[in-house]
Image 1 (spheres, rainbow, N blue to C red):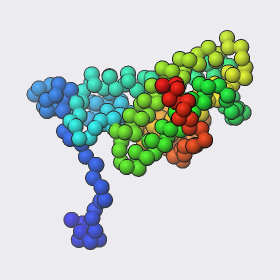
Image 2 (cartoon, one colour; image 1 turned 135 degrees about the vertical axis):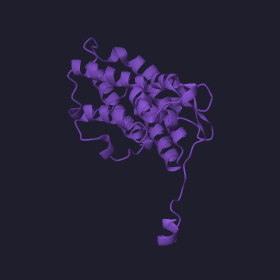
Image 3 (cartoon, rainbow, N blue to C red; image 1 turned 180 degrees about the vertical axis):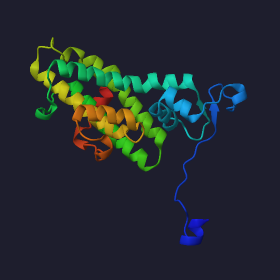
Length: 232
């Protein structure tokens, strides 16, 4: 009413909404049924980043099933995986006294080339989908990348790093690659999971906040479609 009366214009250009939020048992939430979760209770017990991911990874045309068990599934599927990758990096980087600021290394290792290609392809897709207001496609692209990062890149790179790894050049390439991947990943995760992104980014860089960073731009030269297909 104010927009029409005072400005003679529409109050907004686009409305983003969801279908119904139901209890995880598929029924409408009611206190008497014991399946209603008040926001503050959910935020305290589930965590707001997990709650946000439950929403952004959901098809907004479908009803969202919300509850503590669904939240646990979401946390295991995404948040714990990215935190474990971060913990893996920090543990070994500290043991090897890795200094990121002095390490601008172009890796020749096929694993590094592959994960950087996947990273830049993911940045490209997330950017395109965010500009279309498509939160689900954006978040699922990030989730798929995190899965590849953990289950393939880190798993295949375990013997490349740490005090026991003997090839110092390859070790430096692995650390530098994973460091860069984590930083860029934090930037594209930031609108979706603002707290875990900021925690990881600040700890790795000593900068004030990931939310003060520019949105990353993908590097077309690092995208190798053939390599990604072969790795798949």
